[in-house]
Image 1 (cartoon, rainbow, N blue to C red):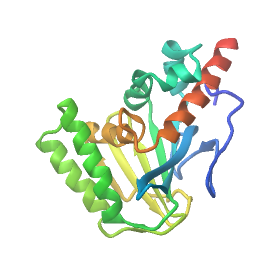
Image 2: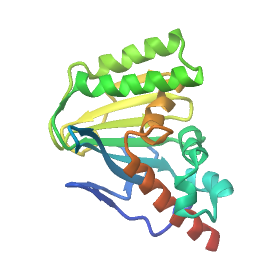
Image 3: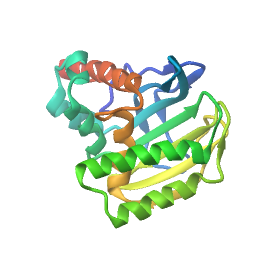
Image 4: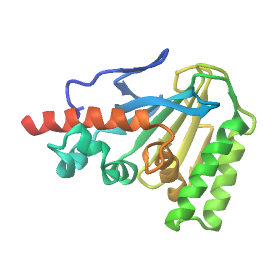
Length: 222
């Protein structure tokens, strides 16, 4: 991968390992690990960890982001919502892995993701009848799923706005997508809920800022 730095490393999140590069079966595209972190909720005063999330990007993301963000420090990237929005909306594919740290059933998992995605789309004025139908497709894809610890959901976000879903009982990427939803606002909203203005994983945002401050500065020096 010519555009990505040679210093790519894995990231460990609890007992999970997110490798530096992934290539889904049958795909011509490889993705590099942009960042990874834990998602959790504070329940009765205790932070409960539910999921480890890794965000992988197509290699063309590096020159695209470098043009605007080269030379920025980790703190500057972390403080800039525009940096994360450039990742969310950038003209390159994204591949996201969410691996469970605790048992969750499909409806329980998708309910919160759906609520957050709908709230975001409504807040930016992109929620209409088409998005309502897409959310219903999204929920239906998860209705019969069950996720014990170590099982994974994989999201593929294309540049045209399709959202591909795969489910696995471990961290192995299945050969075929279980469902494909054609709706760009929903596809972007799912990633927005993870790393946007009100993120479910601040640790993931921190990881992205840390790694990209290194990636882009290495590219600048070269």
